[in-house]
Image (cartoon, rainbow, N blue to C red; front, side, top):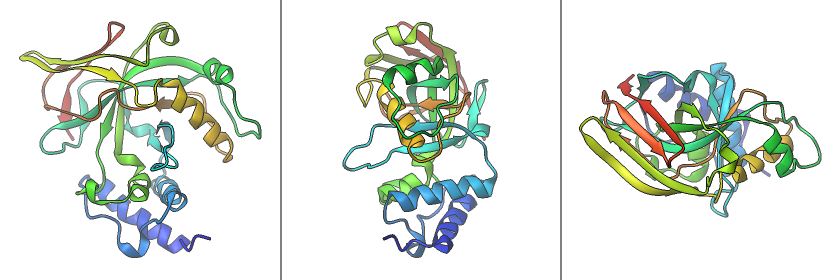
Length: 258
């Protein structure tokens, strides 16, 4: 049985909120309130949102692995951006992003005892979008923290930039495609991207059932982003970026320091 008390949870949440409101990463969680497992971490993650009065605008998720028993984090509605220039907290003087495919939920998938089928989850998708996850941990040295600490901090999510709707997305080869990032001065990146879970529908199905089994559920309008096709990319600030997703998706964005 976990010995993680409400006082410890609130102390950890307060620590992370200080870094969030200061808009500057800080030290890792104090040992006295450090989560030992994913249950403790999710309690902290939830408490941060409650204390900040934030609305859930979406989720980031991936299919669990032995090392990551649960991989899900809320994205605050206030951190989902669809217009450029897009403000971001720089890391090392650059914007840190991940090119992903996200799904906008069209109708609620509420809590229930029986799992949702693949067909039910597909039917709940209102639209599919190209997106860039904005990365920005509240820890100055995220490589030094445990996975529960990372999970408590919403898996380093800073926000989400929404790109255009992808037409007929579920008929496309979303398992993998070419990712390019270009600027007016030339190319920054060209890479054969591969979805980390094989297909973006897999983490969406997992998340729908994970939340439904815990009395939460997905709500209409929420955006679910599902994992980077080419890991983390550091891109320049104050520079127009043209990002392509295979031959079916593209977005234009310029990041400015917040």
